[in-house]
Image (spheres, rainbow, N blue to C red):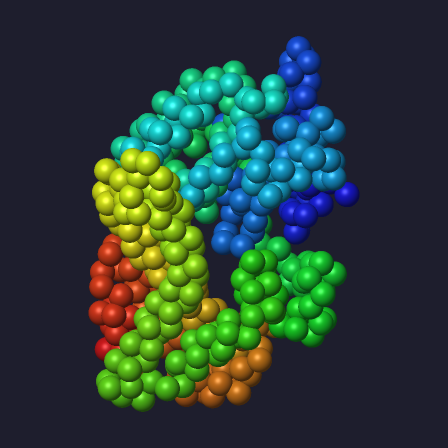
Length: 393
């Protein structure tokens, strides 16, 4: 079993990456290494496994057996401890130019173990214009042993000057059957629950795993999909919007609370809090207060991003629900992600027209665009819920 066997439903992409890893090994031995390049762009819809594919490729580049999956080097890449692989994620809503320039400087160093230095740049589409320009310079003239692995939903999400210098690997959404099989065989999920989670999340493996294993995740999905039935007036629309925003905030707080506490405690230790001995006191040394304030600002920015991501995931569940309504209205023989809510789908399909359903989908997509443009979440979601209640207004 190799590192590429973990890529669910991505056989074609895995084959491309295997050949590139072989070419990279050939290049290290002085050969031509045709098919290997120093900049890659992994694209695909949410849940397709962009980061997982990039990580598997990183392991294949560093492993003497091109990603055997069981050696120490492959294990180090998998757990994030390999000294030559740096995985970067946005600390807030976007990558700043300072963060990107610091990364470029680190990427210029030689690999520690003598093969490749790999920079795995997640959510590269969140780079600001200045950050993208800094990244472009690094990709144009990379050090001979540095490989950039960028991840983004689609090539069009990156500026053309960057994507034209990258080799694009396109991933696809895994099938429901493939995701359900992984949940059942690797995570021990009962087959019926695995099938439900895979179908409900439309092939998004990470979300499917969470839905299958977390009762609270299933409760939140139930609350989101109950929203259309609850919209019977303006007051109900406002209440539903408030609940949706609040649920997303709670989800983000749960995801960040422990991480924030750990980061703050570690930083306070670094700056001497609680230390004793000659020349030391139990408070923060000079500069500590400023560092703590900077960390708190980053944590607030990260919390805002996670809240928006959580809210966006809920909106995508709503889009899938109304897509299923449209399928029922047209009698389409397709898999329904909300098949567990057949009664609600049928009732809404009977009481509205396909045009109404399309207007409701448009309302949800407008809400997503407004949230991306930093509109107040409560206001954006209220406008959406009112449009869901009365789509012709």
